[in-house]
Structure formats: structure tokens, C-alpha cells
Length: 111
Image (cartoon, rainbow, N blue to C red):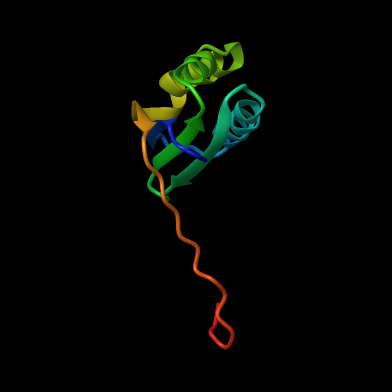
């Protein structure tokens, strides 16, 4: 991704309850987001205690707003407030600079 673009940062603490439909909805939201105009990617992690961080990347602020107002996403947001989250924080940031590193394979070194 070449800046500038937008990062939507969603941190949350989950109410960990087996078979509550969260995993299926999260997977559906990832797939649905990927179909939206301006979607650039997503990264997500959650620890066993329920703390999670998801960062989605979007080309424009209009794309961020459109995703936030998508009907199926609005329903998932409501379920999150009603049953899945103890708390969450939502932030949007404009990415002005980005760098990455990938270790090259070195012959003879364990991977």
C-alpha cells in the first residue's frame, strides 16, 4: 500500500462465550469488507483473554464511512454492542508513511 491511506483501528475486549456466533460474523465481515470499494487489507489478532485488535485499511475517508454504514456491517455492530464486547475503541488515522521488513531466506539458517 502506498500512502496516504486510512487505517481504521478497532480494539476490543470480548465477552468470551463459546459458540456465540462471533467467529462466523467476524469471518463474514472480513469477507464482506474485502468486496467494498477502497478496501486495501486487514490485520487482526486476539489473545485468549479476549483482548483484540483489528486494523483495516482504506483508500479514502469516504470508503471508511461507506463501510461503517453498510447494512450488514451495521447489524454486526449492533450485535457487538448487545452481546460480544465488554468494551471497544474505534479510531481512524491517516497513514502518511509506511515501511515494512521481511527477513530474506538465508541458506543454512533455520527458518
